[in-house]
Amino acid sequence: MTGRSALGLPSTSPFSPNFGRAPQSLVGRDDLLADLGGGLATGPHDARYTSVLMGVRGSGKTVLLSEIEDRAAADGWVVLSLDAGTPGLLDRIVQTVRNADRTYEALGMANPARTRSAERSVGIRLGPLAGQISVTEHDDRLTHMGLREYLTFLAQAARRSDTSVLLTVDEMHGIDRTEGRRLSNDIQHITKRGNMPLAFVGAGLLEMKTTLLQDRKMTFFHRCEHYEMPPLDASDAMIGLASPIRDAGGTITDEALELAAKAVGASPYKLQVIGDFAWRIAGAPEKSIDAVAARTAVQAADKDVRKKVALPAWHDLSRTDQRVLVAVASIDGGASPQVVAQRAGLSGDHAQESLSRLRKTGYLDRPRAGTYRLTDLVPLATVLDEGAILDETDSGAAPLCRQWMPQSNAYCILNQGHSGGHRSRHRAG
Ligand SMILES: Nc1ncnc2c1ncn2[C@@H]1O[C@H](COP(=O)(O)OP(=O)(O)OP(=O)(O)O)[C@@H](O)[C@H]1O
Ligand SMILES: [Mg+2]
Image (cartoon, rainbow, N blue to C red):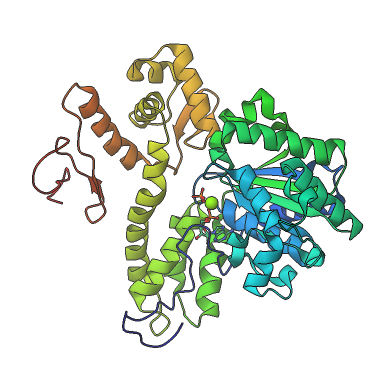
């Protein structure tokens, strides 16, 4: 949409500061795409034909999944894309297949293989099978099939057309345990035992390592090839910022680019947020993005990332893991398990367990054996702020309101059920 509207001016920013939106310039993923793509192209006997992508929030899992789907669809694959964020995944897979012909008709997709991932919610792209999969209420044999039969039916049809099915499941960490077990068994049966062309790529948070990948009844997921989202490096950040700006007719000074790229760190989401703020603050494309705009953008992006990534990640943790994170944050220059145990009031074994879990799930890294430190996921300032709130709640005082106040970027620190407006630690909300 361009031009003036009653609602205001549409943004011209070439960045995508939203989760799940394909960026204009996808950086730092070539090796992973080549490796995983090679596995898919090789076929069911290749370990990478069934893969799981893992990474922290905003590391680009959904975008990568969409890119893989697009590439498979462009090769004429049948693509089924689902997410496990809400219960009922298995029913949704069945319904998606059952409604495939109607979905296509309704959307008027003449050539589904070419539709872009923006239509992820469509759920299925039939490629060469378009028009051949007709699962109607009148067909009794098909209406009474279960998940395994549907997937087998699709895989058989794909094989006849000399192609493959790709099933993708996003937000896998949220999968209902019973559904996860069934899905795991069904794919294992069809792809591994039956050697049928049904490929699988799942994506989810690193916490899967300590939950569903350890479940003995979901061994299939454990045996999938596992990929961790690679952190962006300095040149990825430079290219990811500079190329959308240039393509959209804007300019950025060398100093501003260096400053902004340095602040991106490893995170694709942060890259998009910094780029978007810098573009808008500078008034690009008419004005060049200079160091002042870049510096202000970095500060604004820090607040946004805290709210959208760091705080949700903090609240995903158990009380014990939060306490351990606070203990690590309070120790300068790397924390040893013994000191952490002491400060968090835990036994040595419990502290060690928690430290390993926090490392596996991306909250901590271990620069040297036996020494832990915070990553950028929940940065020092956030851990300390949130730790202070933990202390207040644990001290036996009345529970706090904790209403989030976006404008002050803080929680309400008044007691639950307070009268009047909310108030943050620093100022009135
Ligand atoms: N390789 C990349 N290069 C540049 N930008 C990217 C890349 N990958 C993702 N992004 C951008 O980062 C943001 C987050 O991506 P995405 O939604 O895929 O993350 P996610 O890992 O799925 O997050 P969540 O765990 O919250 O679902 C989006 O704005 C997207 O455009
Ligand atoms: Mg996602």
